[in-house]
Structure formats: structure tokens, C-alpha cells
Length: 367
Image (cartoon, rainbow, N blue to C red; front, side):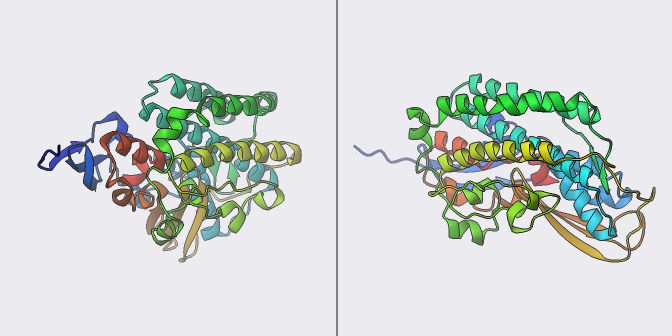
């Protein structure tokens, strides 16, 4: 027997824990089925791009920490690479290796958060999330050894990094590299073939490769569709062209593929860090730069492969000590382009899981 129902529109967020901070979804349901979705932005807007016009080029590093605040190291890297392109600043080899080590450790930490919260949204309460936090904590301790901070690190500078790694950093890093593969095996043993996970993620929220490309989507969300695009390979920077690693891809572009690509990327990041440890040589970690950087009156755009996709900085200089204008290509924002199409037709519980599989941070969405 069919029951006639009237569509009902409700708000999910901006205070709902499953909207990843302060993000609002205005969802119209017919019963439990989603028939329309309107994302609402701006609850965490802090004016980062405008604030950058009043700070010198080094001071802006602290602003980048607070964009994707679970991946501050890669935000630092994306920004300082843009400044170096703008001002023609070179980076010594040791500085580049330390940057790559930091960025890949940050990628692992970010993907652990994405995986843990995805399981949380599947209804697994907090146990898988705490398992992921356990290993992330070890990475944050390594960051604390590097720069004294854990979350908003401000470790990188135009020309290199803030300071060299202390001597006791390297044994701790070796211990992490030796034990982390076993932890990933444990994580996959709990999740990858779990029948509940498969039932709730397979063929759910499918994004085609063509739609992903048309929407300028990048990162694991794009690679889950089968497109092997990664700026570390396509446009090698730092020392990535000296390193041997693979770019994992999916085949369907569903919620499960987005999870699986991130797990395999963590394994590849461990390979990258191990090679950096083997190749790094003593030397300076930062080139000599003036106290106030004054680029010529030019502009530049530089994109970097962050854990969520291509994070790019477009900077316009007028010859002063601060940018004339700065714009951020935030992957968390761009990757939401197809959100409505992914969610329409699914149920309320599926909506939360599909949305979580995109892995956004609202600080980067709103900027």
C-alpha cells in the first residue's frame, strides 16, 4: 500500500556534528528519500584572503594553518611555494626533503581523520575513530618535535623551513615508519571487507570520471573515479621527481572507492617518507631571504597536491611587502560542486555517509 506524503524541508547543521563543523544543508525529503539539497556556506568565514593584504609574506603562513586545520603542513607548503614562485626564491635540498616528510606525514594524519569519521558516520560509534586518532597522535608528536606545535604548525617559510629537525626526531620517525604498515593492515582488516561497510558504501554516491573532471574535482574524490591525476606526478615539485611511488585509483567512484583510495595513499606516503629519510643529506634548511620579501609587480598561481586535492594560491604583487590580492583555490570548496547530484535519491542515513566521504574542512570552504 502506498502512502501519499508531502515533501518536508529541514536543516542539517550548521551545528550538527555530521556536517563537519559549521556547514549547513537545506534538505527536502519525501519520506526518507532526498529529493533536493541546497548547501549553505559562510558560517566560518574569517576573511583569510583579505587579511593577507595587511600582512607581510611571512606572517601569512599562520593564516594558512587555519584553512584546512587538520592538514596545516600541506597548507604551509602550498602557500610558500607560491611566494617562492612570485619572488624567485630557491630552496636548499635538505629543506625540500623536510618539507616532503612533513607534508606526507600530514597526508597520513588527514586521511586517518577522514577514515575514522566515515566509520563514525556509518554508525560505528567512536571506536574506529579513536583507533585512527591513536596513530594520528604519533604524527602530531613528531610535528611537535619539529616546531613546537601540533595542529597550527607554521613550520614552513619562503626558502625552506623554520628550523632543522632535532636529533631525536629521526629515531621516533623510524619507529613510526616501521609500525604504521601493521596498523594499516589492522585498520583494513576491520573495515575493507566488513559486510556492513560494503553494504553501506558500495555503489552509493557514485561520481563518474567525466562529471568529476567537468566539476574540476581533484584529490582522492577524483582518483576514486579512475582518473590518475596527482600533481606530485603531473607537475613534480620539491623532490617528488626523485621518489618512487604509485598513485592509487578506484574504478566506480562510489563512497567505498573514496575510502579505499585514501587508505592506499597512506601506504604510498609511508614509502615516500622512507625514501626521504634514506636520501636526505646534511646541509642548510632555508635559503637566505630578506626580512621583508618584496617581489616585483607580477602575479603567480601555484597548485600543490594537498590531502583533499589541488590547493592553489593565486597571488598578485604590486612590489610591496604584502600581496596586493590573494585568492585560494580550496579543494574542500571545489569538491562540493557535485554534492547535490550525489545526494538526491538517497536516504537520510546515506546522505550523512556520502557527504562524509568527500572529506571537507569548513575552514577551507569558507576561508
